[in-house]
Image 1 (tube, rainbow over the protein chains, first blue to last red):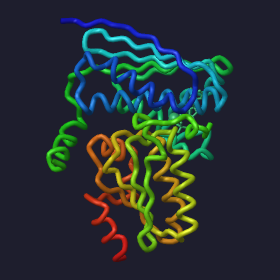
Image 2 (image 1 turned 180 degrees about the vertical axis):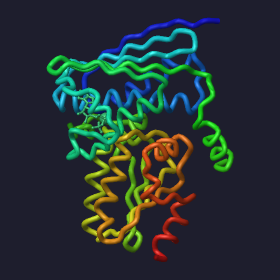
Image 3 (image 1 turned 45 degrees about the horizontal axis):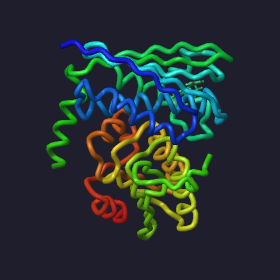
Length: 157
Length: 130
Ligand SMILES: Nc1ncnc2c1ncn2[C@@H]1O[C@H](COP(=O)(O)OP(=O)(O)O)[C@@H](O)[C@H]1O
Ligand SMILES: [Mg+2]
């Protein structure tokens, strides 16, 4: 059976909404029956993108963040968009460990995490206009990290 | 931004209020709450640094036994504390790491500088013997 569904959420760029966004995506993705690992991956990627809108896009001013989600078959698509400062050089911003705000103890791993935990990552940005992150994940496929995770889970019981 | 305390928070919004700090000799044990993201990283960082200064902390143990979620903000918190103690020969340990958090720690490369132990007790033994 092929599933299809869409959802749009808009919320203010307040840091307490990071956990709110994670809760919403987890609820939306539930119909795909994700594994614990898949759900954690999706929540982490969303958390990274939303946090970036808050601390970089709006630089601690309050603006609106839009989260658009859709399900098509076994594929989840999440778009997270801000109308903030935008990114001058997207390629550079996406380099592992690059951060423009080391004073905030940012690790510069946000984009790397989104890339690693999702199957697909696209970033569209324009200085002064804002940033759109589009991520896709296909659920129910073998995960290279999973075998290891299973082993440790057994040990942990 | 840090006015969340006035908002009558409940259990669902696990935050820095959830985090418990303990001192054992010169070890700081940080017992993390349910979630470690940018929102509660700010508070944890400030509290931890107060303890580090006041008690001349050398080693730090992060107890993940209650933790269910962490993103790159958590990596920043661990790395930041590492930078505070490593020049005095301090070490950083993580304890009771579940599979979800372990994936994030492995991906970040943090295990190159952080030691992983099954429990806080084991970590304490190792660190205080040194
Ligand atoms: N929504 C955004 N708006 C503006 N700049 C952004 C946005 N997202 C990311 N960036 C830029 O990309 C850099 C790298 O992001 P990321 O990999 O998440 O690392 P970090 O958040 O730790 O700095 C940021 O430091 C910032 O300069
Ligand atoms: Mg980031």
